Structure formats: structure tokens, C-alpha cells
Image (spheres, rainbow, N blue to C red):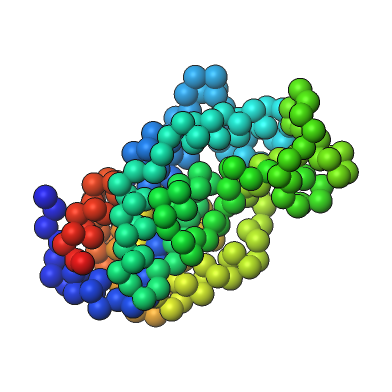
Length: 244
Ligand code: OAD
């Protein structure tokens, strides 16, 4: 059992606005490899950074499409873990909880969280690579990637790739949440990728308490107000029990 400091418990009980940033680590206990875990099997020879880019898609659209299809398959075969459910429960205890996720597996919504900001999109959605509109269905064919039924361009996953800009409205909402929160959680993220990694610092700047949950040290650890070292699927349910 982890002991939580009285100060941490007081901060959470007094919090009216909580902002949460999650990364791949929150889905690790669901069996979804984190972004920087070594890739396995067929994909072991590739680095995610070399596949999740517009250049990779332009150069070899089938390879990139198949990689995301593989990741979607893994996500469909898994389910949210205790960490996702604890965050959905936390939302029921505070006036406002905004959940900002870098993950594309949709597990926070599956676990019952609402007010979820998907910074990097969602693997389960597909869009036209030319018109940038979500396409829900298309003519079944063996084409990989399939073609847009409207314009014939390749379809692609509705996720943000390296080098692509995040949708402005999404970024604005995430920045706003970091700006007004009393408490900011950074959970299961290596805090390496911008603009997500700046959100905790926005919270720190206006005096919010920043709580990091991660088994390892990250670039945020030395700045965080509270550091809970361990797995989010274990820590979050205990934290909910200790506080509310
Ligand atoms: P990373 O793979 O960079 O980091 C995962 C973090 O989760 C690491 O700090 C691990 O220590 C931590 N971790 C592992 N298991 C955990 C557990 N059970 N509980 C809590 N933490 C755990 O994944 P992200 O930080 O999410 O963006 O990567 C951020 C972005 O980098 C991704 O969204 C992706 C990539 O660029 C795009 O694809 C645009």
C-alpha cells in the first residue's frame, strides 16, 4: 500500500478543477506497447518515429496503413485497465476534470471518462488523406490503404503524425485546461513530445500542484510537486480510495 502525503490528499480534496495528461504508459497495463517500447514481431525492424510520419506514408502508404491496422487490432483485443477506470471515477468526485490524452486507443472513453481531449487523434477513426475529413465507411476492396469514396485519394488513420500540427481547437482547449486547473496530473508519459510536454509547465506557472505518476524518472520529475513512482493501474485506484 502506498502512503500518500497529507498535503497531496488535502490538495486533491480541495481541488475544483483537475487537468490530467496521459501518455502511452496508462495503456501499458492493458497490454498496449508504449510508444517507446521496443516493437515486436513483424514490426520489430521499424521505429515508430519512422512510421508515424507523412513522409513514411507518402513513401510507402501500405506499410504505414498496415502498421496502424496492427495497432488497432491490438487495441480491439485489449481493454481499459484499473488506471483508466480510476480516472473515470475521479471525474465524478470533482467539479471539472479535463482529460487530455496523447493516446490514440480510445480507452479513456471506453472506461467512462467524458470531456476527453485527444491531442493526437484516434486510431479507430479514418480520414481522407487529401480532404482531411473523417470517413466512416468505404467500398470494401483489397486496396491497402483503401481509397476515399469521395475523391479517390488514399485513406489514412485519423492520428497526428510527427511533424504535423495538432488541430488548433484541441490545442487551445488543452492549454486552457492547464491554465485554470488547481491540480495537474501527468501520468504515463515520458514528457518528451511537444506541445503536450509543456502543459505541466503551464500549470506550474500559475501555482497548480503537479502530480506525476510514472515508474521511471522523466524530464518533469524534478519540477513536479508530487511524484508517485509506480504503475498508474496500481497507484490511481489507491489514490481514489485514500482521497475520496
Ligand atoms: P512513451 O512511450 O514516450 O512513454 C511512456 C511512458 O510511460 C514512459 O515514461 C514510461 O516510463 C511510462 N510507463 C510505462 N508503464 C507505465 C505504467 N504502467 N504506468 C505509468 N507509466 C508507465 O509514450 P508517450 O509519452 O505517450 O505521439 O509518447 C508521447 C507521444 O510520443 C506519443 O503520443 C506519440 C509519440 O510521438 C505521436 O505519435 C504524435
